[in-house]
Length: 336
Image (cartoon, rainbow, N blue to C red; front, side, top):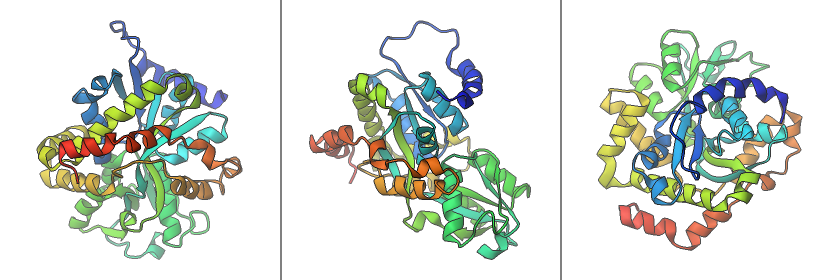
């Protein structure tokens, strides 16, 4: 394992290794680095006991930086990660054997929102663009967004600034700490209502992407295929619950609790974002990974040498689809 991960493991281990009763032998730790409405199926599956129902007791741990998440994955402190493709590709280029099992969001689900005085893409030249963290999913979405707008961070002197998760990004924009931010449609709609400029709704551009994926080490998948399969089953039931019209009040409540918001309208927008951005059958997106690879290779040539096909393992998702498991779940929850 590369030494660059060691310091991250040191501070993360205090989160994961704490005095507690002896865990069940089969318990799995899943890490995630993003807080948005689209993660609510994971939270729901954990709270409703869907993972245990399908045979794999699981704890979910929030790690605020994707680099820390993959450091713990490399160290074996976390067995499965919920993350996007950019950090995963960087980790694989650094020698970590990873497999992308599924992709719940295969198109960019974010928008670029700017201060009211910034009306056009050209007005971003020489300005600061806020993202969650360098190397993470929102960072990559921001770079693809700038590319879509015809801007180059270097040539156009757009400074990319790490400012935290989306609530913190919104606060940074409101305080003029940054000039524009990358956030999902729930936050962009709220800001638009306050007079801020939505420069591009990337969520409507259909740009291939990898966000909200299921990622694990190749060795863990080989040694514990049943555990990974059962994790996917529990997660898929969380998706079915979250997408069901019958459970909307419970899903809204989950979104408000985890995002720490009190505004019902903002929660409703997050709910709609979840409905629109979630792939019903989340096969790994080869097209999305290639798009991420293309842009990352400009900054990390080692990423350009990767064979993307080798990162994908769709066997479990294909099995659950062909067996009728996914369709049966959706039918039971009334999801169309």
